[in-house]
Image (cartoon, rainbow, N blue to C red; front, side):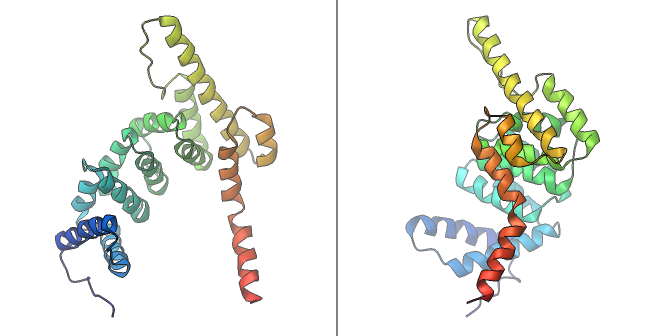
Length: 235
C-alpha cells in the first residue's frame, strides 16, 4: 500500500529520514518509505520551500548526514537559497561533498571569485572523481569564464600550501602542484577544442586513465542508451 507523506510537515519528514538512516545501519530500513520521503523532500526543496532543513544536513557534524545532504543537493539543483551552504562544501573532508559543490555550480550557473577559488582547489583535488568533475565544469563553461579561471589557476591558486621546515621541499611541491594544474588546463583546452578523447589521452600520459575513461563515459552515454534500447526491444 502506498504511503502518502505529502501532507506531513518537513520537520516530521526529516525525523523519519534520520530514523530510516539508523535503520539502514541495522538492516531494517523500509526501501519504499525511503523513496517516498526523498521524493517529497526533493520536490519541496526544488520549489525553494523549507530549505533550512537541507542546509542543516549540509552543515551537520555527522558525515552520514552531510553525505545525504550532498545527494539531495545533486537532485535539487541550483536553487538560490542553497548557494552559501553549497559553497562551504568545497573544503569538506568527504570527497562526495566536494563533488556536490561542483555539481551545484554546474546546475546553478553561478560564478564569482569565491567559486573560482573553490574550483581551482577541486582541479587539484587528490580525489580523481573531484578532479575530473571540476574539469568537466571547465569544459562546459563559457569561454570568458574559462579564460578567467585559467589565469587564476596558472597563478598558483588552488594548491595546498606545504609547510615543511625546508623551503626547498615547499618549492618542490609547489612546482609539482602547478604542473598538475597546468596539465589539467591543457587537457581541458584540448577537449574544449573538440579534440578526440583517445588522441588527447595519448598527449598526456602523466594523467591517470581514470580521468579520460570518465570523459569517454560521458561522451558515449547516448550511444550506450540507444544500444540498450535495441537490446531490450529484441527480447
